[in-house]
Length: 302
Image (cartoon, rainbow, N blue to C red; front, side, top):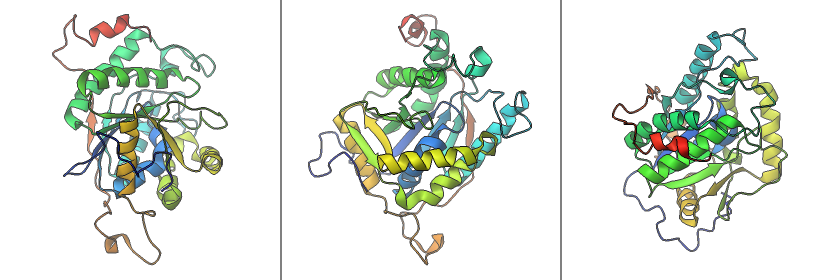
């Protein structure tokens, strides 16, 4: 593994767990984790971690590779693709089913760089809160929102707020969003983690191919070109401790998910077999009141 975080001098609060680590992934749209973190997800799974994911904006009409494009039928198409991905990766999938930017009046131009509406950030937080409480993650991976897609900004803002309120000890990390991050020279915090995913290329590509409605034949070359420049998938810890936790978890995974001449059943205990996905529809907590912290989010300057 190649990582910008050194493992030689452990940071206080680093991952020391007698049980498998628990990781929660926040995905603005059904394909964002596969696009941005496919190799990392495969490597974390190989390390034996238990993973959950929340797809925030599941309502959409955008499916350019499907006959459902431009219609409400795209919602079911993309939901099936998300389930296909969860089946392949063994991730417990939660669906927020909020309307994406295209259904909230944005177009391809205006959705980039727009500030998310406080009401939609609050709704994202409402969906994320019960998922985070149930998952009780050790690590929370959220979009960096490179180039400022309004849905990604909403997911990030809500995740930061909920994590601080509900799980202050959880390691918060930001992943760079692809394809938006392609060709963009940027940094986020002083705590980068570079994940070597060369040994997980097949799993990464298979995850992207779970989303045929999103024209993966156009996305795969972008991902490959970006990785050839960066050397892997890039994340940034909100703190040095957060970066260390992820680095130590990744260090427990083999360099490759499958060695030559070995079948999955013949591999060691690090292999996590595929399983049927558990799909949960995330909804707002029923006990929120007008003066609850999440209600007060609408007054925050997102």
